[in-house]
Image (tube, rainbow, N blue to C red):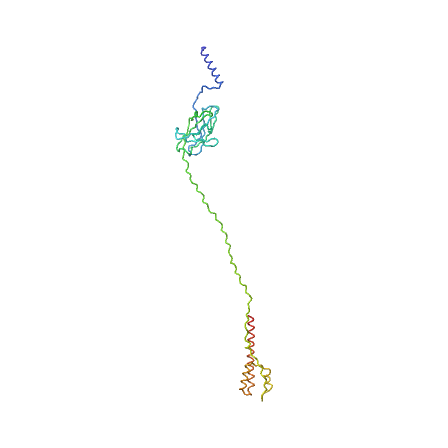
Length: 293
């Protein structure tokens, strides 16, 4: 080897050693562009429905951290319909700035490979139904947002419109039957019955005492000739006759002969005596009966 060539080789070796020791990278050897592959993803989703995508990325810087963003759209030129779920659960739109630091972060291994799971959805506000493309866009943590790049590799899935909300019928309030109080039977108020007062006896005037025959003592007449004295005395002694009977007898005596006078007096005396007794008995019975009532 000529001396000149040896000198150049030694110089380049010295430069490389110096640069490696100083940490300055002058040349980056690019083996291939980063690409993504998807091992699990949905074929059909609805607008606003969350879904999960399992991915793997190669050809990144070893042991480095990267922000990841979901991009969805009807073609590769309009990938603005997707949203990415942040670690805090916030849904980030496609226009969210990288500098916010909200996008999920994944770390590469020593070979520059990343495997992970990212949660996405079609934006409820601007989602497009039908076939849509899904890709991943990344930015290395700490670099300017202008260095963000869209990874090679994508898949197509079908987006359906959200279901039409069916109004939930409100339950009709069923009135609770109110228990009706059992009517209390009203007993009739007893009307006080007048206490019968003690019967008042109205004295009934007794029969006119004038109805009681007045007894008149008739003088004893001496027996006439041819009459038995004892019979005359038996018929007249102590005899009582009513006044009317006596007067009537006197009239009869005046018109009657002396022989027949004595017999008529006896008959009339008996009649008037019986009538007097009946009258006395009737008056007494009437008075007794009236007091009994």
